[in-house]
Length: 303
Image (tube, one colour):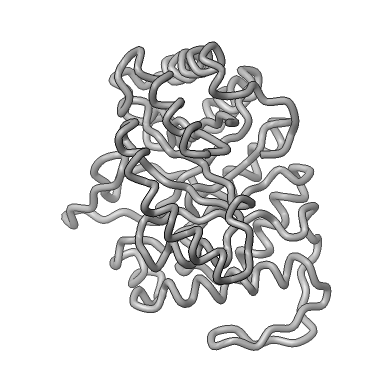
């Protein structure tokens, strides 16, 4: 497996000097990739609770594609990923353009992790339909790939119709890899039909074991679409505080046995929130997992 670091935006976001120091240090520590999270807006009084805890209007989420464009300039090797960009909240051609620009500026280091979102109020503020977001996301994936690989491109779908359209600059990767974060049956089948990888979440080694049933849904959908399930990557998502001290080797071994290709660790929610505390936690995990032989130190620029 390859080990990555999730940017702890709720604890450290907003300060460019801190962001730069964190990213340069993560790259120097040998992490394979950096993953950026997303919420465009937060709401007070709505009781929205994510994997990282309660979210409100004060929750700091750096805009992921802008953040990764900044990181492209201050890093040289480490892969850059979103996990996840809420695709149906956004205009498809604009996402294609922004992602292509990040990929070009980084020399082909972008992995676009997407999801369909779970906050209806966010969709309403952005004037997007919450109810059809899954179906739109499938069409958006096809449009993204057309715009990344054809110049000019044409597409005729339910929500997108165009002829002789193109973006420039094109990305280095044609197409940019698209990974999906989902645990729902509809999302898993969408993933099997369309995606390059999966971003699952499990809080324990036992939770990883329970993912096997979800993976079977992905496998069936991929095979029905004429795709090889073995070509679909798996990036396990974990919050540092979910795993007890000295429990990292067992936890990562469970992911390795499951067939994960990547493991992304975020340190959001540490009791102490200085950048050095976050980096020390990441270094501890890295050393534990490399010693256990369940992850590989990064050897190249691509994740």
